[in-house]
Length: 249
Image (cartoon, rainbow, N blue to C red; front, side):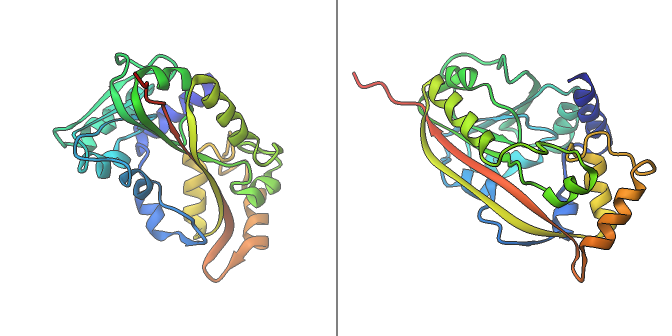
């Protein structure tokens, strides 16, 4: 766990959690939704939104422009420092905070979002207003599957497809949420070789990735999966939208 947090902090110091430049260069096929667009369907000018695991803040800018107030928490000092530098909107605030002990009072938020960040559903339920929504996108087990098979290791490597989403649904329902939407997709992505290396160096897809030590694996990947558009792989994503029931008096 310490190694994971140290890695995340180091990414925060180097680049934050902004992969927008990389995203523009990646060719994507069959992506079913855009997370920001999904969230924007549910927010209003009166919404107060909390973003869990907010990273360096860039992802909440579209929300802040359409909400009354947006708050982002992250347990990484380097990420929060980046967020405060990157987002200058007056209605967007960031602080260090643990998703397992959210530093806000009961029934504060209309919407809670989590993009690839872990969720403590009991805590999310506590700080959410009645009738509020929890919207999350998570990385599925089959994400970058062909890359992980070459390495013989990786994020959720060897785990059964669908287990993560099933576990999340159970925890959410146990906390009191009603599940409104459950969805997933498996898209195709093409990366230029330097961009793939950048991705592996700055995400937990292959834990402990080292460019020098893992050269042999990269050669195999380049040989097996090179196409005109780049190195072919896949993105697997889950989407859940959950509601805290309203109390009928």
